[in-house]
Length: 485
Ligand SMILES: *Cc1c(COP(=O)(O)O)cnc(C)c1O
Image (cartoon, rainbow, N blue to C red; front, side, top):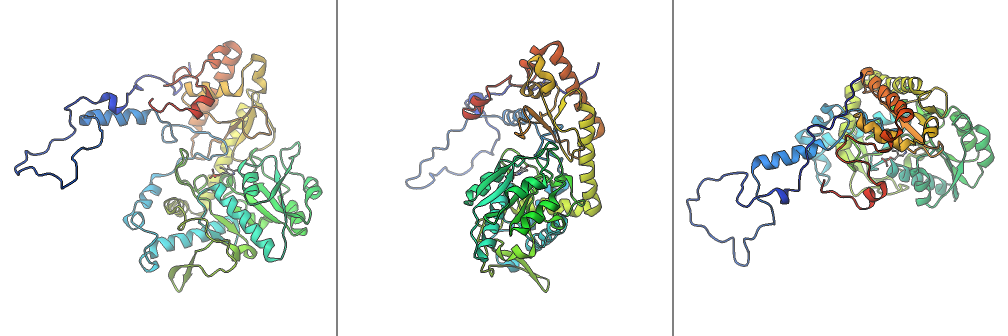
């Protein structure tokens, strides 16, 4: 019998520290006092905060046990489609912790911040090179924030030509943040359908593009994990009517060093450093969503801009047409350092190879699982593949049941019920950092689950059975989370 990773042994329950404390316990011992005690000062009481009395081992076990309730890419495979949960090399953390970086302060003068400014300047250039664009801003704090910056740039561009356009084309395969960002900027998103191949047709765009449309927001590769093959022609149509092509580059992990977006008609692109460029993410940690643009859009970039002159680095506010600030300071610098470290340690060849392997891994899963799971679009995919629960509906098993059961087997479930264009979707993104052995084990787990769906569907409906908590009411868990464990 095949052995799987999932187990429930030795994951221990743990109460709150307040429930665990016993009066008189202590985590440290101080030498006996050899001076008179004296009060802290007039008006100050000596009452401390309400902390429990605990020994050192009480505290160590408490936090170690809590840490074992967690799951991350350092624990196991995390194939969350659209999120690029790849393993982030520890050297990136180490570089970000160098004292000069860790101690940098945004209010220090440029003369005392040359290292961090140089890092930012060079990162801007690397990202422009990777995307085939001319200039970069590092300010946006996440992908969606980059989209908003992009929309503001688009607006400023049209305004500078005395135009005021009101609509933006947003395909049905777009991330939900796209129409939201467009709307936040005052644009009306115009939804368009992708074709039966899962991509945009030139004709569809030609039909809706007009002189009142500011441009298009296209995710490439799109959220079905498919490459928008007609992007070049679509860009020509949009440009011919004076529009701008915005690319949501959150899926850049599929095409680093392969496609230079600037050369296929893209005018603005945002990147997710916390996805593609190897910064740990999830759980609400900091992100970074730089925006790269073509020359025509450079004057509108947020200020301050990081500049270089004769080997001296500085910040410039001298951009009269700028959209202004996207941040109180300069962006999430810690994330930038990790991305910089990643790009420098990989080099151009290995960045390209990472993308190639990400695509290979996704296609391997697609080929080995199709049949077991229904494949939404049976054609080569990029870095992720989208299945559905269609083959399991006869057993009254849905995507959610299989996702929950995967946890019993020791895998983080993939993204479920997204993208919306596929009913009951299961979106798997293995990333390049998983080995063939780990991917094979994941595939076997999915096959075993599909088998259980026919044989003993209750196993799935009751799943997870081997995890710390069983099937939760998803709404209650989100609205009224019980954080006590
Ligand atoms: C993740 C993602 C976003 C949003 O990025 P955040 O950093 O979460 O704001 C936008 N578009 C696509 C395609 C994504 O995958």
